[in-house]
Length: 440
Image (tube, rainbow, N blue to C red; front, side):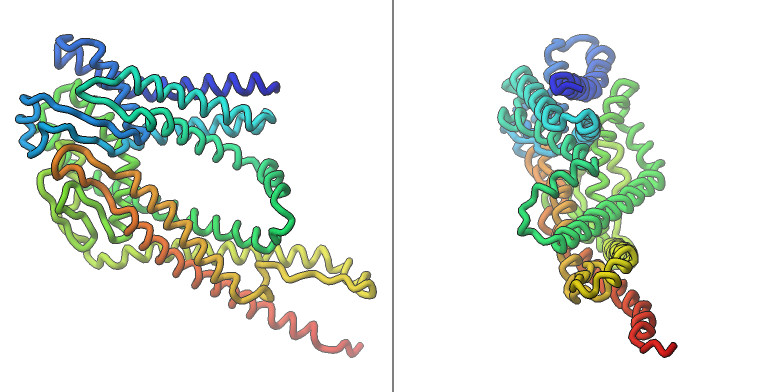
C-alpha cells in the first residue's frame, strides 16, 4: 500500500476518533439543553462546553470564571474568582489511545509506519487546536498550547504502542542500535520491562476489581444519592457519562489506595487503607462508593505488587533459562565437532552460570519502571476539580511512584534469585554426572 494512502487512512481514522469523543460529550449536553433548559441557552454554549469537556478529557487545563450568582450558590469560598480545572477525564484519553494503537498496527502492517504516525499526530493536534480556539470564552477557556499538544501526544503514544507490537519492526529497531550495546544488556532490559510493566498492570487489574467491588457493594448508597439529586433522565445521562469518563481515574485512585498513599478529595482530606477523612465531596453519586473507614490489615495490600513482581520475575527468569537450554542443545553438536577450533558458547543471561547480579539489576530496573508507570498515572489522574479546597484532588504521584518502585523491586529481586537458585539446584546433578569420567 502506498504511503499516501496509509497517511490518508490514518488521518481519517484520527479525525473520526476525535469526532466520536466529541460526540460522547455533546449528546448528554444536548439532552440537557433540550429537556432541562428548554432550549433557553444558546446552542453555541452547548458546542463550546462539549469541546471543553473533550479537551479536559485529554489533560488540557480549563480556566473557569463563574458569574456572581452561580458562585454564591456553590457555597465554596473563592468561587467568585477565576479558578482552574485540571483533572483529566481519562475515559476520553483512553478512547483516543486505543484508536491510535489500531492506527499504528494498521500502518506497520501496510509497510508505512512513519506516514501513519505523522498523519495521525498532525490531525489530532489540528483538531485540538481548532477545538481550543473555537471554544474560547470569558467564562471558560482552555490552555492554547496544551490543546494543540496533548491530544497529539496521546495519539502519538497510542500509535507508537501499535507500531512496537510488530515483532518485525522491533527487530529492525534493535538492529539499528549501536554495536557497542551488548546483547546481554538488551536481554536484561527486556526482562526488566516485562516484569516492571507487567507488575504495574497487575496492580491496576487488582485495583479495578477493588473499585468494581466498592461500586457493587455500595449500590444502594449510590442509587440513593442519585435520587436525592433529582436529575431526571437528561441529568442522569450526563452524570452517567461523567462517571464513565472518570472510571480510569477511579482505577488509578484505587491503585494508589492499594499501595498505601491513597488519595485526597479536597485539601485536608485523605482516603487510605489506614483510614478515611473526608469533608464535603462533589455531588456525583459514585462518591457513595468511597470507603467510610480504613481496611482491616491494611498493610497486607502491599503484598499485591510484591507478589506480582515475584511471580513475574520468577517466570521470566525460568523462561530465559529454558531458552538457554534450547540454545545449548542446538549448539551441542557444533561445540563437540569444533572443539579443536576453540569455539566456545558464552553463558546466557538466563542461565544459572550467568553473573549473580543479573536478578538484582533486573529487579531494580523493574521497580523503577513500575514506579514510573503507576506514579505518572497517579499524577495524571488527579488535579483541581473546583475552587478553594477542591483544587487538591487525587493521589500524590511521587508517593505512589516511591511505594510502587520499592515493593516491585523487592518482589522482583527475590523472585529472580529464587528462580536462579532453583535452576542451579536442578542443574547441579547433571553437571556432576557430566564431570564424572567415562569408564566404558
